[in-house]
Amino acid sequence: MSLVRYNNPWSMVDQIRDLIGSYGEPDSSSVATSTWAPAVDIHEDQHQYTIEADLPGVKKENIEVYMDKGCLSIKGERLEEKKIEKGNFTRNERMQGTFCRKFMLPDTANTDNINASFADGVLKLLIPKVEAAKPKRININSNSTQNTTVGNMERSNKVA
Image (cartoon, rainbow, N blue to C red; front, side, top):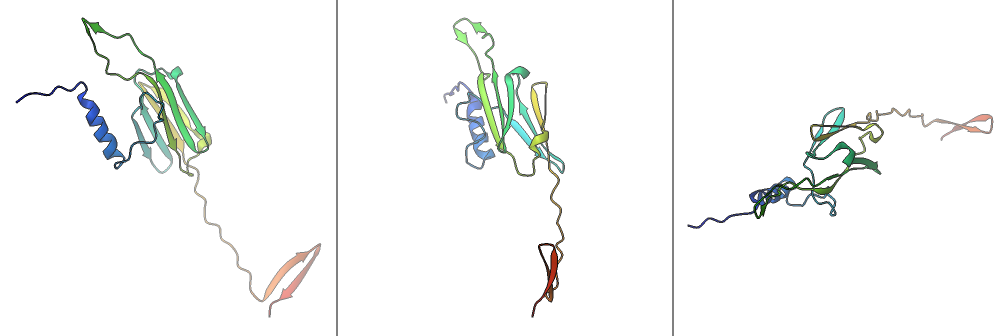
């Protein structure tokens, strides 16, 4: 039996995870021009949405967060560090370059009050929810009399 050696055994696992995680459709939240896409966790509770993006090795000044027409964009760049070379072999498994993730937020998101923080390589976005519209009671007038205002005079119309 011969052994088959893979250059990056995790690339196949990542592809399978991407397919299963999106029910067979590729993830559309990473822009096609991105070199890599950071992993994100999205959580919802009664009061807010939370998005956490893993950005190890990315500096805060290289991250931009935008909100436009209900679409939240996280853009940035991980700059290439010095490669470690041993003889004729160079190993570089960490992704470098630009990234962009976009998320369409629901109507219940209060996009005017998004709070962003960055610590220990994790970008955390807290997106509060707007207060749900409360049902409004509408009074029903009786069918026999309908009051209308014409100019400054009120008149009563009887319905037969």
